[in-house]
Amino acid sequence: MKIHKFMCTLTAITLLVGTVGCAAESSETPSAKSDITNDSGIAAGVDKGEKSTDKYGTSEKTAKSEIDTAGSSGKADGDSVGNEAYDADGKDDGVTDFVEEGFVAEGDGDGDVRCGIEGDINNNEPPEPGQLTAGEWNDNDNRGFFSNLVKSGNITFPSYGIDPRYRTMVTVTTDDGTPVVNAKSRLIDSSGNVLWSSVTDKQGRAYMFSSDKGVAASVEIESGGKKQSYKIENTKSDSQTSNITEDVELKLTFSAGSKAYKQTDIMFIVDSTGSMADEMFFLQSEFSAISSDIGTDGTRYSINFYRDEGDEYVTRRYDFTDDISNLQKNLNKESAVGGGDTPEAVAKILSETMIDGGWSDESVKIAFLIFDAPPHKGTENEILSAVKAASEKGIRIIPVVSSNGERDTEVFARSLAITTGGTYVFLTDDSGIGDSHLEPIIGDYKVEKLYDIIIRIIKNYKQ
Image (cartoon, rainbow, N blue to C red; front, side):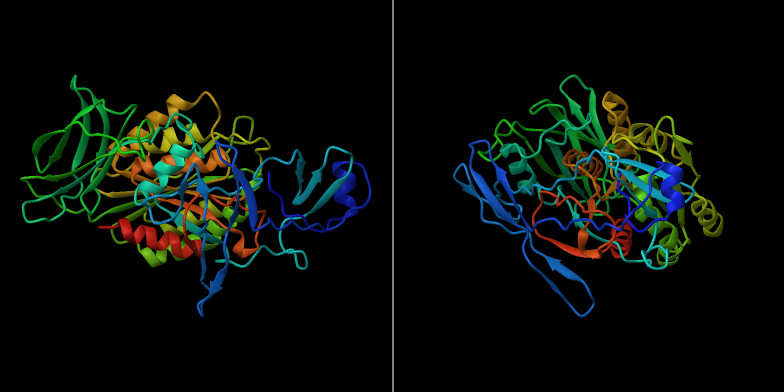
């Protein structure tokens, strides 16, 4: 659990642990370099690069590295990469955390306690709105990079039931090249069973997945009351992806047109356990601005929260609405408490929101999942069912991974984004707020304000 560590009072210490004395403590800044070792035992130092800030305060972070792994050098252009990885801690430090009446305390297991009040060290105020920084990475757009990470063993699948390795991507257009949007796309095996269903985006693209390579036999496209089937020819894997991933990319011409959706449904799903105070404050302070920037004309919003078994609640949901004032009131009632162990009720909230979330049939569907901990083991089937339902409805899941997330949380988040046609977002240390953030295994990315990324993503998906 992450905690802001500030000064506290004798009352808090006595109340919580019966001991006296405390001091302010700051988090250690992670090193800009780390060592990784590949399967051949070769160690490589990875430099996260330098940042240059422009006049708008936006910095460009470079994650380039020259890595020679098993004879291949890496680059971040999506064509060919090596074993790029950053060794960040991101693990539970074994500290026991306590929260009582607004005070925050940490026990290190040796009888020492560090405690404080959430907020600013001088005036006990939370950080200013709009300060959280983040990056974005789209694995579907950088498929070569992703495939090489899988080949090198830096990331492995399935991840909590999701396996994005065997992908079929279709781009559907009319005879004149116009994208066919919102078309139902189905991946079918030789026995006629539907392996995966998806919906084309405004570029006419859809992503579908199978459990193994070579099992998909055809693709079916449905739009405007018409259906067309397309046979998948046997393809030979190249040396980059052989026995690891097998991608099929099809450009399909469809005889019927399509229509864009005027309505947009935007959902926020938030882990509201004690480690998520910064992210909770961000949403509470920025939600009205987000809804004002995007608007409510043809747009509905929903906010949902989850914790874990044994907490005050496991899930708490608010239906889609365009009543921003009422939704903001409900949002402001929430606080980040509970949790305490790493897994949370991710499977339950995904099942409830993706399968029974109240989404409009004819709408662009975007779901931001803001979290820092993975699901429980043993919930793989529930998660896969929820992800398949999301993909079939055209819900684009946008995971936003927060501080203290571990590598398996990153891989899980990226799996959600890949299989639903979403994109992966992660908080960075550049804001100086909260605990350190795990550096993801990706290529070059731009550091931006989280608010700006959310607005841009919504506008990119809107039709």
